[in-house]
Length: 491
Ligand code: FAD
Ligand code: NAI
Image 1 (cartoon, rainbow, N blue to C red):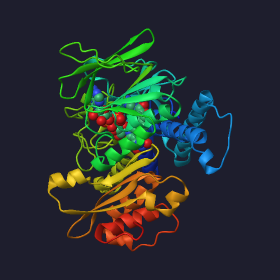
Image 2 (tube, rainbow, N blue to C red):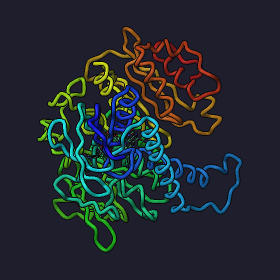
Image 3 (tube, protein in one colour):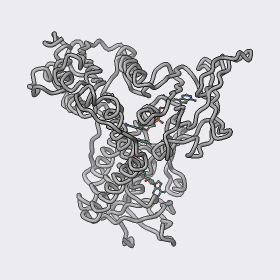
Image 4 (cartoon, helix red, strand yellow):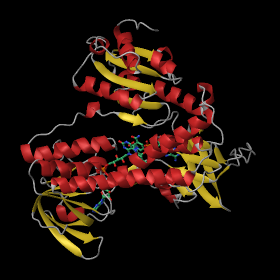
């Protein structure tokens, strides 16, 4: 639409933070526009993040299961083969239908969708370089910055991403053939999800992680250990406490140079793992990969926004500084999602989008940062909310643990899918739930019950005395709660 401001609310960025804020603003009667420069709504999440990665995770799991797991279930299939281009097409179709769906929602809610790149001219005016050519200026009383994040480049420029041999998550979602050998730099969420996809499709995957455990920030250490064991059983290899120094492409192969995280032992990781050839004082492995995935984090994205013209300040990590009402140093400009503080998660950005608009309209809004779930969509899934055991120990909080294995859950057994456990952490004195950690089938759906419980200030006993249908996986959740203050029945 041709913008016809001035607007009550102008949202810059059409990702999960921005598009949700725009719809909410329009629903609350604000005249609203959303500027998006990528040519499609949905941001990182829908275009190159959550959605395409889940399409690949789901379909690679089905392929792997069909190939390796159906026979023991009494299903004989033959001639199973991978049609990668069709799998990629199916992924692209999901993305397109969802991004188009948001365009429909914009129309229904009367949000003006301005296709172009926004840049501040003054605190209330934004210039938009239109994708169709030309430029326009838009004026607004309230502005929300929701410009998201981008792949963090490898420190010091030691690795250059070409999205073919050395890829970010974006390239890893679109590889046109299954790599023989893949090295994943960073054992965080992206590394484990994308590593799983390509491992299931046939690649030999080695994950190199700087820290002593996988899963990234916020994962419970006990869960991380179990997670690593299960992924190793599926064929992924891990090199922990190992820092990647550089990666270089030569003759179509990439060689990756690493060093022990303590900094005393340099090696070159190559896919044939031929061992140490003792180049003193370093021990050097010759190991090559066909594809290297760089997944060492993401960073806030504010390029081209010209924030100086609006008086909006950044911190030393490039995040837009906000107060508890999402207001930046220019009070009528708010900021949400990946480009500001907090976990870089789509649902966190969405909650903030709604709350920021409610602040504008009503003067109050609400996001409970203690109750934001994290989910890793591997198989089994890993999900958590609230405090980890290591958090509680560090804070000196006294707690009880309740654990229940899926191996003792009837539905998981019936489904022949019984790896993992549910772990409750409750305050010793009050039994209030402080954290829940799940590794197992459907963990990502099950964690919502824990989020709700924490949101409502529930105790473990509240959960344990709530009827859960039989036979369901969620009975493992109930029994873990029971184990926190008493004994579970089935274990
Ligand atoms: P973004 O989604 O990054 O959207 C920002 C938008 O702003 C972009 O579309 C950009 O083009 C636009 N923009 C930027 N500057 C301008 C400008 N000047 N003018 C106009 N437009 C501009 N999170 C989950 O919760 N679950 C998952 O399963 C999950 N999987 C992921 C998988 C991958 C591979 C990746 C990379 C991320 C994943 N994430 C996941 C994280 C999730 O994608 C982000 O947390 C989420 O997209 C953040 O939303 P946002 O609205 O803050 O920013
Ligand atoms: P991450 O921060 O989760 O993990 C990066 C990992 O790389 C860390 O474990 C870190 O120790 C390691 N690392 C850093 N430098 C290294 C080096 N030189 N050598 C070896 N290891 C090194 O970042 P990631 O995986 O890139 O994901 C970015 C963000 O995207 C996540 O934090 C998450 O917020 C979001 N995301 C969420 C998903 C979900 O919710 N399911 C899926 C994918 C991404």
